[in-house]
Image (cartoon, rainbow, N blue to C red; front, top):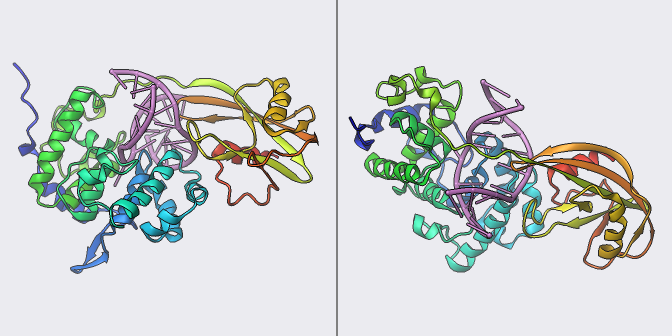
Length: 360
DNA sequence: AAAGCGGGGAG
DNA sequence: CTCCCAGCTTT
């Protein structure tokens, strides 16, 4: 007997909304009313910033970054006029630094092409760099309360369990199903802002990947996975590849109390972030030649200082930190900067560079 | 369809 | 240790 297709009409929207209005976390970018008055008025710029930061990042991690960011750039115009260097520095530690540059470019596009106003419809929001289907729907619904659907990791997990979706949630066919359900439900909810945030909030605090708190779930009476005793098995995801092990060598090039720093390329890992010259191998003998060619500097034989590992999603990187002195030569213009380790606060540095600096 | 892109929280 | 996070873009 074929399984019945998931039906959005089975979802208890009112119960979810009641739960969310009682149990939502107070977040600095989340619009909120108290006593019929806005305590936090919907601010489309704030919502856009928070959603950019929240991509693949837990909300609790985002909050302090958000506070600092909007203090530095209170309006979309401030962000549009900002130096990329400063934007990246405020993003330092959050990861996925392309998001910061996309957000910066989005701010300029809003000022130049949208009359300084964050677009109101998901269709217009999608034109902004770094804004995909999820972020467009989130800004449209949270900032403007328009019924645009969203599917993030939380929504996918809640729906996979509630509707007992047994196919991998990252398969295109399943994603289409999820977006269809999200669309039907947000349309029917008559409360897009609270409904979308409510499903995510449930996923983040109750319908969690592990240690699911079904006892406190407003949907457990009619949840298909709960009825079948299969909550822990869902959602299914396609397995991901293991990280590749590689070795990088950092050259701490010293002269007169300062070290040489350069900016990374605009593409790839840690794009546009700064670093001490770092080679993507462990051939220290080739380093001297590289530095001579790229910077016009003759350096002494690099000596090992220490080593450490850094984990990214796709690589396990063994960093070998070495130190050397400049013997002769002048730095080619625009190819780097000499900095004492005490004055690096305006240079955006990724985690491994900060670790290396600590070790020097 | 698959890969690249960070860093940290939580079990 | 493993898994996953209010995903997007490029190939």
